Figure 1 (tube, one colour):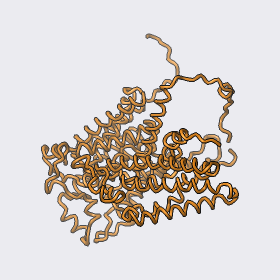
Figure 2 (spheres, chains in turn yellow, cyan):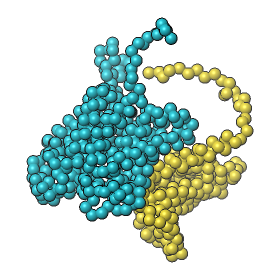
Figure 3 (cartoon, rainbow over the protein chains, first blue to last red):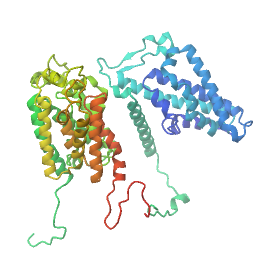
Figure 4 (cartoon, chains in turn red, brown):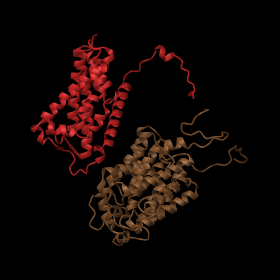
Length: 236
Length: 344
């Protein structure tokens, strides 16, 4: 099966974005997007697990029977998540403590199992790994965007505590955007995640509409357009 | 034209949305005036600014949604949202707080759901809760009665000058909540400006809203069910859990009826025809639910007053209440309620 890498890229980052279109993995998306550093940390972790699990699932795709595939996939994902967890514990301990339960929860993230089932189980190793990487990137970018917006609205600052993830280089990265900002608590609290997420989806749909409107109108002459559809009331 | 032919119907009802909303605004005027007597022009400035912002946000979103702006502004519903928010927020609130509250009320609470008639939540209360959760410091500093000068209020509102000592005072509900070991008599003796039942400003403002509400009832803008349900439930709850005048007291029933935003809530907020229940029995239950929740949050919750939270929580229940209180339709023996849809 030949794989179109360009299409994979467009799908993962925009057309079939896990965060904005598939709406998968909303729990970590909402739970950890209250600051840039949390969002980036969990985004990278998810990205790594997703790329590696896709590659691993693809490797064993011909050896596993359909009946037991789901437990096997989950075991692989759980093992990889544990690796990431241990790595974070070793190198970014404070961030590991902040993200807490959301790191082990990567195992249950629907995107990962979804991509394993929908793509990696049917394609070769290289394209599966690429698909995992680009889907993970799509997810991480949405997470990062929400994190940036929420941190900016909530505290008036950007990139606070980035040293937790990037080490001592990033100690002075905190950028106070608004001086004397009162703080808008709602943006950091859970409702803020839903609001920002909804607005981002609206923005994406708006851009899609604009792009569609700019294209020349194609005349639909398919059979489906001609078919008469009989609509009756709701049967009770 | 002379002898022009007129067809039926010959009785024309005058309860257009516009008239109803205009009456609600008129009925709020006594409360506003009494409030102004205690807090200077603060409440008036609140109401004016909120109405201005509300109309501005409404026009903006209507323009984005490509709807006729004049048509929708003329039903005054957005003005009611602005007026109610202005009355509910602390007098002389900073302008940006009013802006955020009205913005959330009108844009997120109302227009994003599709405008008037589509909103599941009461827009004014949604805006109120957003600022209450986001800016707790500004939302809990009510000015004391007769304390704030006009220029002081203005500079607090527009320049962000903090209140001077003695300009703000804990509300009676606040004091009761933070009461440590004083009997009620001692507590109220130490509270400046305590009247007969509650603090002087609180009880008179509540009385004014009660009068406005009774006038609205008289004009048949809404029925008695929701207000009676709420006030009744609050009365019964505070009677059961009163606890006398000791230090563990939760306050007398009349104290609860005439403190905080009780009357504003009962006659102006929970009677919102859109976000409240629709059936008569549903409205009664809606009011009772709000009353019980208000008492629970006031007495054992984390906030001194709770109209906004209770109303939002009951807004969530309103569709279910309607579902289970469908009236009997004419010609049928039994009402079809809830999942009891046999023989349909």
